[in-house]
Image (cartoon, rainbow, N blue to C red; front, side, top):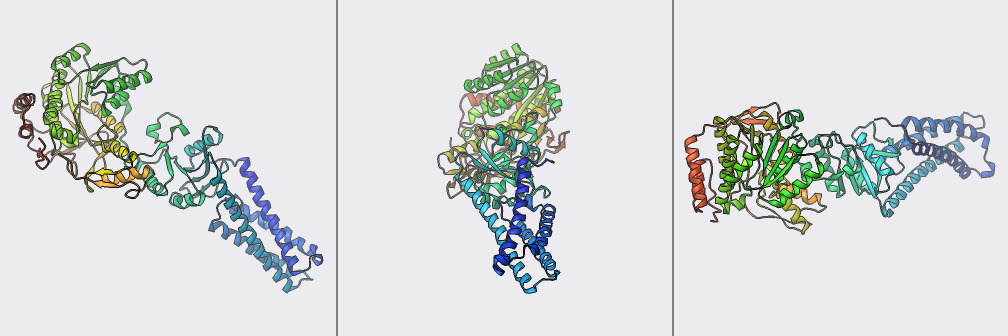
Length: 617
């Protein structure tokens, strides 16, 4: 990006150039006065060196851009340039003086050696004084935070402009960081580009930076992670501008800056959804979202509302969540045909009434019990809600001609070690079985842990940090796949567009992340030092918990889709008669409050490994 120098910048260059010239002439006079009595100085003999030296100084400053360098940074390269300039002037002046007929070799040599020393000391002192004044100014500033902007591109400059003109923004931008070496040591609107990303820790210390703003919306997730990893040890406040995929058509502004969150440190590119495909099957359709008030369900409602449905039905058993998303959607989409229902997916009569009355074209089934340790102690409730509830919603979808049914599943359904994961595997089996016998396109979406969702570790960690610790991690080596709520919902919506019936869509979630690393990063982002300010305590694996999750069972293969981040797990052969007879058996056992529910589920899901070590029934 090319910017014309500001008036402030032009004035600064002129002043620096004038200071060099005046300092040069003053140094010659002082050195001459020291060697010779001031009254005996031959000013005519100094006129030629003064004029030629001044011309050399001006040419040297503009060719090396030394007059555009910051006086607030007494860096080695700048002092080296100053030393070189003085050396050139010393040799040129010595040659000129010696070429004169009246030249005294000893006088010339002593005079210009003194000049060289005095001139260099003056330049060094000026720079050091300017640096100290700058440091004191930033330390004494009461209502402004010194800011370093990472990214000297369009976004960074836009942020700078707003910070410069707004009375409400209490920031003082003192420098830019950019890896483009052509920009380093230049000025943008009077603010210097002070170095590259790798120099951030040193620059923060030298310039007393309080806040770092990362303003590179075009940078990939892995690059942003690299930058944040460098910024975090500085203990500065770090703000970040959302990426292009988040900004969409919204303008870059200070109001869009947000605090860095753990999801920024995953280093994985977000899943991108083909908006045209999503709009293509949701627009003008009646869409039902079960569990519509939950973390996944509510985000589904937000994104669906923006894609022009004929009607959106939010169904949830928990009235407070349903109310919150209802009010939010009414504010954002006043013309949306919105229906909010309080109902249980376990209630056969109510489900039948809902489908008969509203005739949904598309169903997103997000309602479920999903908290692993709680379900370990209440397995009957997990079966009633997850298995029986899903069965009833799927049955109504088939009966009333729903076009597309999307089941929200989890990677915990693969070789489950807990009852929650096992019930989710049964849900997948129900969906794949119905897909074979129904005109409805039944499909499931399987993904990992969702950052910030109800019951996830991040809200727990944040609460523990706010209370002063300790932060509890079950095991130092435990790892998980992670994704953001918008990513999860993007995948679910995309799956609906690809659904032919019977598929289990699986997201490429990159590398698994250590929960211990997440805890440390979240503590640092909160301004503390792990195990120093906030302790991390290991509590042992919880009931039903395992060290790592899997995305596929051994029998399942992967096929690619048009979105290279989304794959399809091969449908497995399911004994339909055994499945439906087992569902009846599970129903009776659950409502008779059996003490052997886990064993009954194991009969239907042989890959389910019951956690006998933590049995708490």
